[in-house]
Image (cartoon, rainbow, N blue to C red; front, side, top):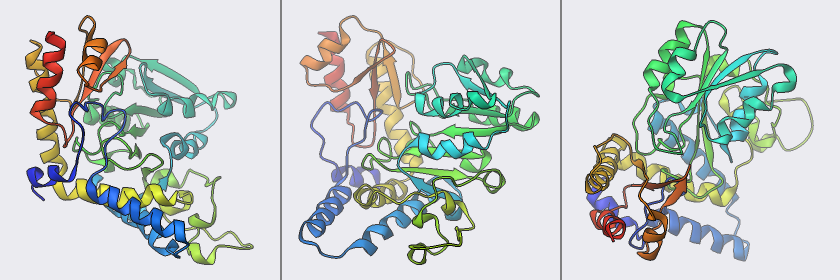
Length: 345
């Protein structure tokens, strides 16, 4: 689908520059949710349709990041999907993480301290050099939540492979606008309510087969069964033989909205979205006399910026003491100019 045509499916109020906090639903997502709520309200049996949305979401995510659908697990949060990865680390393992890393990609590793797992934090720009023969896993965000910096994905993976370390990536702030090859990592997890514009409560994760062999599905329920509809009662343990064994039962309405959202992003194409988003981010930077960048998320330190933007009806965020603006498919040049005029005032 052409990007200009797709943009007509969103209806934001002017001044929404905060997709890094949460994305806005396109018409297909909004409509699917209303239909599901109407079905629920009157007791129309639509469970199979709702469950099908989870499978559609899995397939669309796999297509977006270039992996087989069988290597994708579904859940509700990034930390929940990372928990069995962290639990699979051997006692005394060493993990390297950027020092300003979002908590969902930090607490799961720190929670293993009682088993002797050691977490070392370093500046993002020093992450590659910090990976050595004593490193068991390197965990990082593809795009940093605090300031929009893009991690040197290929360099980090190469360093990890050179030292026999696993690679775990939180792609929440990148997936949907930044193309990347998930197959290069061992785990790639995404909260889908930001750049994938799904409802909050949807998370998806690529789990490489070699990593899955080390992991134990401690949260396994009926949806992790090889045949979920045949896994309602009684032993024996009969789990799926792929990443689905790490599924949790899908939050129905979240996935009802997620399926059309992910399918629309895949149909538009991530490269086209990147070009649009980054062009708007650079228009914003240029208006402030700053050099261009490569990210859809930018942070600026302008005196009184938060108050000026708020008075003008521009919704952005404040992270680490700086204003964070984020630009997505439904953002426009008018949104950018509205923000620039507010900051100039």
